[in-house]
Image (cartoon, rainbow, N blue to C red; front, top):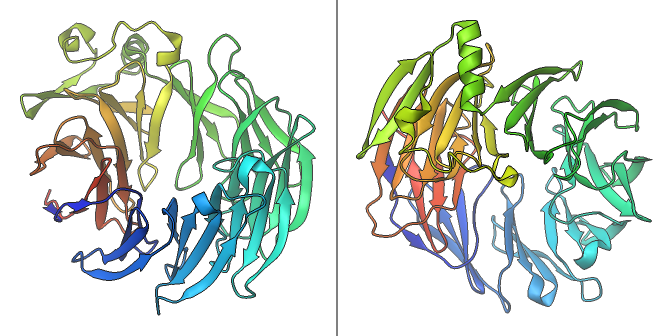
Length: 432
């Protein structure tokens, strides 16, 4: 693996959608680099601090949020000209997102009063949507880009609205059977919308775009509820992380529960005994990894390595990270009970493939978008690369680096790692 020079910054960083450009902000400035050689392409200066940067889906434009003065600018990356400058002094701006066709932006006002839709081809505000429940979640575009689902809150009730993204005309609006809707997401085939409650009420619902309730699932009522919802890349599995230390998988057609993946070691051992399965134990020890293939996981062997093993606080037993591999064959997950352990599940057989035990707590992990390679960041100065049943360590040539984010570009050729004020681009060319 090759590593770029260290880039220092003091704000935000993001890849363009095609992976060719990297934008970072430094106070009132933005610098854009080519990712292959870190050559500076252009620099933009503004009168106020940059609070958001976002490339358009077609990578031809960049959106710059200057929310301290309630302004947005959109720059062309073809000729560096300003496409539009928007000022919202009355309602303010808290977040802005691109429409999938790169011709419109949606500006969320302060205090969730409204969403203004701006058409860049006409350089004017086309319309607005009232009462969005959130500004940073509670909305989802369908995978074909034609529809926009939005959680709304009006008169102390939750509603779901579906809009056509061509002109953001309303197609349907219906009440949600929730007391405090937490988030929503389209299924991969665009046939339904998954909705879930906050972490106090354990409720999962699936609606048709016209408002028919297709499924409601309440797994229990004596623990914290849903923490995460993810859908496999092939769209066949709805993966739901819960506060009871379990992941539940649901079928994408019948919406019935397929299985529960317990992160409790005793439950895993019992299942392995019944199904005659073995698990790879991969344990970090003095800068290298030892590997075991076992049927019964003896926790006592690893008690000195496992963090928080005796933590009985219910708030610390929820699933807090989970992600499918690009081909939907593997699911990586982590819970708050074992802060330094990653579970790797093999989805075709719904069995546990590996347990990876690190010396330090895990900050983040991300699968490559093009191969079964998992990048893992912990609290030490190394990048871990898991490639099914093997693991590699790449030490960073720097004295201090506290990982807080991993971002892959879409073709899987490179990924970005960052802490509070430093960035590296890693070029993924590991030879197996």
